[in-house]
Length: 129
Image 1 (cartoon, rainbow, N blue to C red):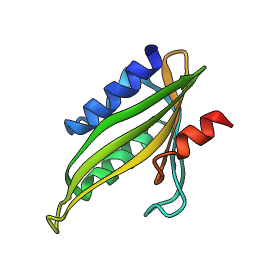
Image 2: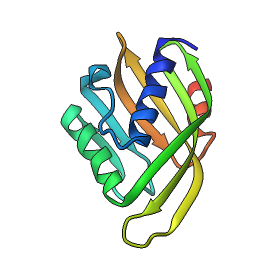
Image 3: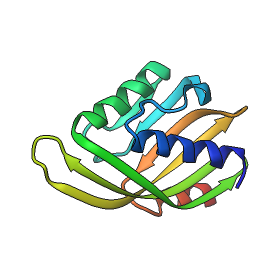
Image 4: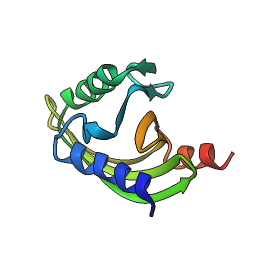
């Protein structure tokens, strides 16, 4: 695994520990955070503050959110990852387990775009196209 894959793993480790937004030294000032269609707040957010706010908003709904990377593929400046997540609703106490994928784009060791998908194969399809 290359340097960008290591950085992506560090983000998931941080998020699983409740450390938001994660390793800030790897977040580009103009980073894009992209929610898929069907997300509670779909669309793109621009900038490091918006990236942090989007992650914080997601975590507001959960007592905890833990993700285990299951597959990771690096292609140039792109990293596709599939994670298995476990979470518990903050108000409901309902536990949820599932899989999702994300496509991370890097420039000079910094994340310039983070796009997550409901489907566990979507990020890999995007990187392969």
